[in-house]
Length: 433
Image 1 (cartoon, helix red, strand yellow):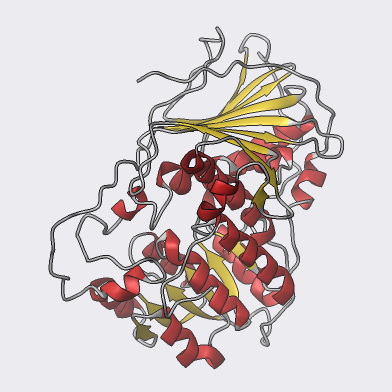
Image 2 (cartoon, one colour):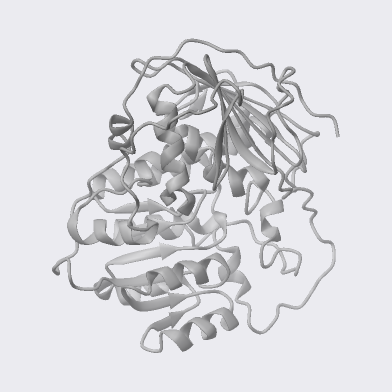
């Protein structure tokens, strides 16, 4: 596979304290919980299989009062561990029925139902934890950002890597000026959630699957086993390919370290767009404006085996996924668990800056503490919503086939009206945001 070239430049950088960078991401919600901080919240989990099962296990420190899943087998397995919880196949009925008993919801559905479930719960005054990406479309992300602000609720996106010590140390390194001015970042992931094709066959719906509820707000199509449990990510109707699956995890690191918000331009490179399936390999180039004392940043995303061209810096290894910060004084490569500075000989004996970002109490516990006390969360919807918007704009640029000049305030590509149809989802009858 040919790898797109992206030459690396080095520019000036102004020192920014890590403590200030961490504080900028915190958002103190209002407190809707009526009990004391020592009491347990009443939590409803929407989606309890796969990633939902992991979130349910983490949420077990609170009082699980309701479980919802379209798969009766997933629901039965979850109910065995939480026999007092009420069970539902439709989150709308769950929220309507259990309204007075629920303090917070945890949403772990496929991407296309993230926003409808989260928005309904938030409008009812429920604190909300939602898996990544926050939504399936750009406009949905903006709606959840605005709802969180309006309702003053505790929110958290499920990018659990954000809670690791390694991410904290990388943020401190970048913000301390260890590699100098950072004006270029490269992010990559070898996963391939591409190639979804629309089945022509007709397959009976298994007895354990509530297909209409799974389709949710999307345009209806017959059941096929090619979609479940995870291959829905290959189809635009339900997901956004590898970009939608992984970019919120990996782009979170430069977003945090460099205080990024909304890109000014977005351009994408890949195979000819398909109306049904996501691409097997994609490159997306973002340009972010200067932020206060921080310089403008070019950020590039690569998936499906694509990599940045290091312009002769072959000694910098690039694993299956990672983030490369390019600074005026050097480079920093990081993944989920490790980081290293380059060139290695220049940074021999390097001593990291003091640790200023405190250890996480746990990504889920941080959310539940915020529900009870109004304490901050680091992946609140204001922060993670902007991150999700940028990620999803990569898919919009690719599908529109044009470099977008983005007006974040207007939520519009000012040079590309053909992008409008990809910015929002059309919900089928009976579903709303």
